[in-house]
Image 1: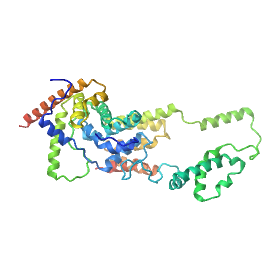
Image 2: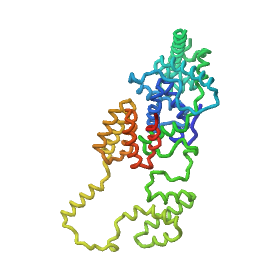
Image 3: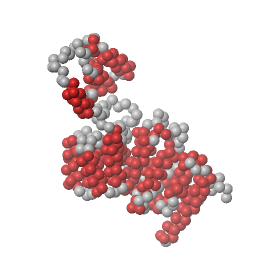
Length: 173
Length: 252
């Protein structure tokens, strides 16, 4: 798990974790069009509450909690609940061939579209545990819920995700 | 199944998650643009975050927002080592404290750099009322009631802006920002016009004008946005928002 070196500095967090915040918001269902505005909100809240961060803990679950709450507020409006795009849109050019890039984008689109079918609470646990690699006790501590609730949500989220992927395949066939 | 342990991950899901885990590297301008937007809300975020140099390292450059009178002194100060600077500030403070006795002249002699730093540190001392013996009263004192009234007027003029008023101004800009983020550019413009009426020379007028340009762009009023941008450039040539606004207006 990545952590930001001490002393903790807002600019340093912003610089190191902006891609993570953008990706997390996208996974939570924020559309590409609104990503930057919502990320701005996230960092405003982070800036306000930076003193509350415990440097002994990994930074990403802490940041994810901000992403979760901001995305939750944002997605309350129906017009914000569109299908998220697979591309952030502002990524720097890399060494991939166009074919590899297109294949990866297709895989991402499939995952994001399936994630969009899940409830935000279940989706959050799944993203933190299975994609970001945060342990269940850390998730429980961050979201102030029992560890068993984390496991339960994780199991249900995986089941829902699998079902959504199956539905996608069936409708494509 | 035991609720306290996670199930093993399905291979299909594992493959999808593995593809999702690597984070993309973003273009530097994305970070710069976002930082500029953040600075709209938090004026204390002045240091650029995504430049090549590490943000926590002192760069030796004077921030754009320093008043011109202070900038040369700050430049000189940044060129000095920490020990030299400490000694200079100590000397300058002592020199300022002794200014009334005429001893400060001895501290001003050494060299240009020191003189500049001394001038910067001395600003509050110079503003203090001079001793009665040095500036004799040449005009007769005003009648007590008139003098009191004049004093009250002067005090009212010099009084700092009340916190509540500043908060009110900030909340208006915040509301405009929120409606902009919610996609309601029309309402944003209304709120900004209200801000302009209530706080024509408010502390957040730069933020207001920048946001107005963004709202105009979102409403598709390109020529109006361009005109507003030209005015903005003239009023705030060193603004942190300028680069992001130019990009936004020029975006097809």
